[in-house]
Amino acid sequence: QVQLVESGGGLVQAGGSLRLSCTASGRPFSTYAMVWFRQAPGNERDVVAGIGWSVVSTYYADSVKGRFTISRDNAKNTVYLQMNKLKPEDTAVYYCALVRGNNVYTRADIYDYWGQGTQVTVSS
Image (cartoon, rainbow, N blue to C red):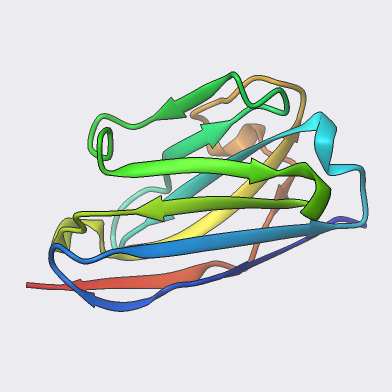
């Protein structure tokens, strides 16, 4: 059984930074792509950033390019999302998700495992 546990969310002022972490347990982490999604009230769950197991393959939504950076540490079974220059529209619950392979997909239904989510609130 795979478990994903996110941490690092919180309240921050616009222009500030947060770093989210997601630690996986239960399976070899290194053969899975890891992705961060987010969902604001009334909105669909949208992909924010993803990284393949090879680390070479990364994806960023246009809305976060240049501000967010995804990285992973396979030895620690952890993926990180460094979020800089945060905006009020980044406010959402952030989820990490995992799928076998090296590809990053934007469809949420592709992913096999999900964390419980961590709230990020950016005040103006």
